[in-house]
Amino acid sequence: MSKEIPYKIYLEENEIPKAWYNLRADMKNKPAPLLSPETLKPMSAKELAPVFCDELISQELDENTAYFPIPQDILDFYKMYRPAPLIRAYCLEKQLDTPAKIYYKFEGNNTSGSHKLNSAIVQAYYAKKQGLKGVTTETGAGQWGTALSMACSYLGLDCKVYMVKVSYEQKPFRREVMRTYGASVTPSPSTETEIGRKILEAHPGTGGSLGCAISEAVEKATKTEGYRYVLGSVLNQVMLHQSVIGLESKIALDKYGIKPDIIIGCAGGGSNLGGLIAPFMGEKIRGEADYRIIAVEPKSCPSFTRGKYAYDYCDTGMVCPLAKMYTLGSNFIPAPNHAGGLRYHGMNSTLSQLYADGLMEAVSVEQTSVFAAAEQFARIEGILPAPESSHAIKVAIDEAVKCKETGEEKTILFGLTGTGYFDMMSYEKFHDGKMFDYTPTDEELQASFETLPKLDIK
Image 1 (cartoon, helix red, strand yellow):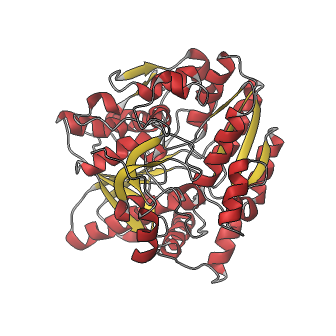
Image 2 (cartoon, one colour; image 1 turned 90 degrees about the vertical axis):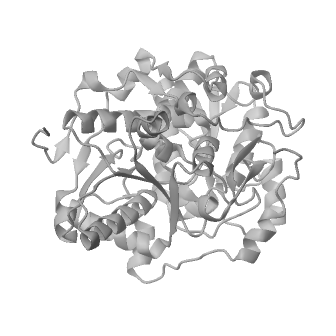
Image 3 (cartoon, helix red, strand yellow; image 1 turned 45 degrees about the vertical axis):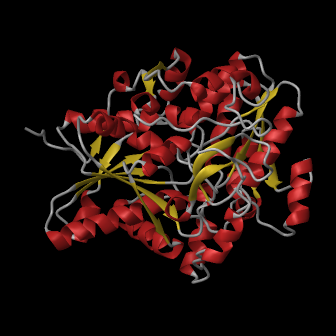
């Protein structure tokens, strides 16, 4: 029998997960391996060593170990803002007049304003442990750059951030938070790197993309002694660290005998979605329970819903490994929409395999409808959500309305990955009627697909 459910479900400090969950260990069909851009053979730890930290490489390549113990130093850091609350959206349910029960896992209760700190501190920790001077990275909306800046400041590491140019211009305060924590922030593409100069020559005046910024950050890391590159999404190691989101969510729900029917997350590179769904998807794969899992992406960058499942470069400069993923092509530069963290051309390889196997769904939504949902949520639930998170809010509302129409009493869980207080220029454009929707044409996507590497690999 279910206990009386409070508005916010808090866990005790001793209920913070003590290990990250590696979903790949339970997958029947493992994700395809990363390939070397030089040999087109599976990447070895030795080949990845000039780019990534050693311990992170081990986590990236391991597809058999189900649980990785969380170091005590990381647990001590997590205690500053974890466990994160699971919140019942009673007010939203009432306004929608829906029989659905809506829960959201709120990850915005730290200075970075998002879930990104869960992995940033881990990657900075292993860089410090390896004796490195600093790290380089890219950031889209700015949450990852902010989180990594915080982590590096805490551990005394240098941090060089390449920020997607359109976000650099749209979100100056996010940039200044990074600088406050001691990071250097460069708009990408830039003239600082050889790859940046090539991209600017090929795409004059471009607002950039995550693929561009990744290329620049990797080049900077590999050409600077004592530095490594760290990534805020896409990689399996990042999804591993973010599993704390799903593990905490499941612990909280289990305490009250609650089982979600539908689990919803926004999808850019895949870290927060993968982290939220990890333990639930594990149960689904093992045949212990069933869930309907929905990935939500922007119509302007629809890698799941309109992409190709193929090997592609992880970056625009084509210097990173190739991953088998749902992709729009590494040369695809999306329209400058305001969900900067979702402007990546591809999707995490593990999530791509799960989607290909039919274990999850995906939908794409237009940004004006996303901001309308964000505003509705803010007015009712009192939290101003990030544009990225608002994609999940939009579909959670849609599913709750369907429950009203059918009379079904479903339980919905979605990830509220962060706050939108540094996104007010985006909200301003929405309120002033200056925000537009853009959906790439079939012809535009086909032109990008034609640039996919021609590999004789199944």
